[in-house]
Length: 300
Ligand code: HBI
Ligand code: FE
Image (cartoon, rainbow, N blue to C red):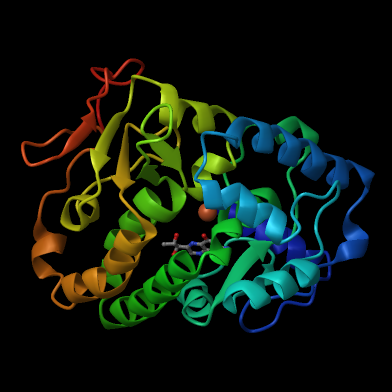
């Protein structure tokens, strides 16, 4: 969090006027030729890698909202197209925003997008979300009505649960992590039987190949309670991916499912969490990972 805070401070210092909801006007004049070239390079690289690996609606959505351009897109132009598709908008922010503010935006069909883009020497890995991760990773699927409703429902549930009991943040973050950020979807027509929809995967060169093709990680059918109890790694490729059947299933989980589960979160909060690489007796295992590169090297 220290790096993110420093980054935020840097933006404040640079004189960007930040509103109470942490939004700013996208400072278009601050992008230079290098920034635009980074977007162009990342977009073309990921579009190539994701053909046949990502969920069908993902790349179609990216083109639909005008991300297939050779420069950092105008957030206003993207917003206009997205609004027509599902009534969602994107808003520019300096970086990570406080949890409550983040949930409030989602609950009101606004997706916060970090305005700045990584440097050319950071193409492959970045610790905090930048414009490419937020916009290319998260926004294309918001053109899908069911996915769009699922994220709004998550925002509303998270806002209420977090206000009632801040300890639920851990649980909410696990659910978001294993679906919105690192989710796979079952697809019998795909070469490996699954396609990518998670934003952390689609915006990563290495993980967009690893998540669907590597024998190392576990791929386990999504189960709400299981995911709510599972720790995650932020510093390596995932040891386990959870696989949904449809965006309808995601909507049920991020909507009524987690809302009812968090109405009385005590048992979940008290339970010992599962490790990121654990495979349990009750799991529906699609692929049991070989663990190459991580099993026996100590779990989280
Ligand atoms: N802020 N800009 C931004 N993007 C996020 O994904 C984000 C955030 N603040 C908090 C937050 N995520 C977490 O609350 C969730 O990932 C659970
Ligand atoms: Fe993200």
